[in-house]
Image (tube, rainbow, N blue to C red; front, side, top):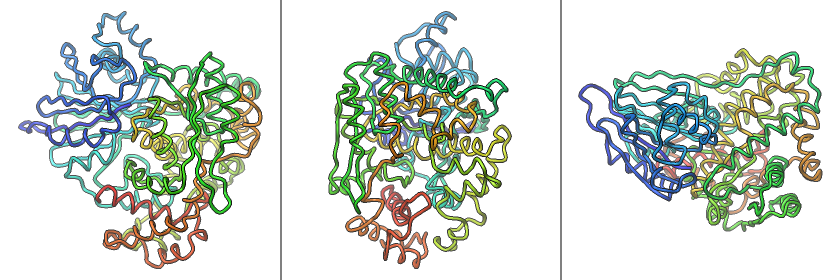
Length: 593
């Protein structure tokens, strides 16, 4: 929805926050908020904001928003879907409002309920609140990290922003490579769990976290939500049909919540079960003239680059205003550098360019869309979940299916000085699997993927690529009540029918079976999967450049092998190893690192 940033200075004689640094951060995020900008300074604390008008289009909701009576200032990115209900409750308690949007509701809620307020919010959000009287600053991020929040620290100061490049624009950031983060990037399919990023000097607030920063810089964190995977005897005994009806009703609620806006809301329609079900539920609820959008690319190596046959089927079935966008290979290649520059962190998935170009076209006609991200992680749609059901060693099974390479192979790919001194990625997963509350191996994987992998891959990808064009994407499958419901469902119901069984059977009550019974698809961008011709030259140029040679992340013999035969070097998830290493270098160069 927007871009937020700020600077906090610490200590009794601390100097004022830097308006110039805040301005540079805000300007770097201009695409996230093309409809307005603002900066508010109050001594040692300053906030900046770029606005995308979605709710309360008037200037009454301009940000940073200051409530002088309460002594609170907020910079907010996101949307609180239940803000009308919360507003009514707060008005009953005597609060009076000067605007009709959700931003002011957060401020009043913070005043009324304090640390308990974020737990009352249905939505996606990252915000900062400055309390005038206490001098504290509070940073908050939503349950699934749908809205990002990065920060950097120096001697006597902290800066935060919605994007990592915005922090770089402010300056004074340690841009050395974090070796543990590099281990995660190369091992865990570019997933770098919070608080780390690939840069040692930039961190990110973990999801579902409230961070209270005292005037002297002391920090207290509170996690206000955690997923649960324990189930009652009643849940264990429920029939598949009962779960299907409960899932469908939960999804109906989630989709309906995400229609709250003062502008039209469309759907990114891939043609898969998830986005098709969103369209079907909107039609069921009486939505007419719904705008839907699909994208496709040229074939490569005989592999089709679109799934238009399925998105066309849904568009015809529901009579949507369908926009089918085809991107020639040359146009994709021209736009790759722009998509890479728009990434807040290096993200290797091919569909980044798809979301980037799709968002460019969608933003020409609409500001808000619903998208199907999250269904595979919540309802067990990926191929590595079924083997977990019978896993004697869940850690081995998960790593063997998902990790791009093990620690031994990584030592053959990274230059010795860049290899972490331990198997950091495997250690992270082992620690996560050992936590109480998920005894079933499938549940362990689902908990990890929903709260770590999903946050730092698909969710981050969608936010970066859509907000690069001032487009807000809403994800009903990450409604926290729907996720809590899914956590109660026994794994067998989710694994049925090759994965997502309970969701597929629920979908049969709404959408045509042809979309449900098709082979599972992924966002197809064949040219980046096989990396030939000009794409090979792009990768070679980046990895043999002076900047790359001076950085020296990768062993030269490994790079030579990749250049010689890119299709021969693929990860367990069928991704190109060459694209993975080249993307990292291209991103570092795009950020001026």
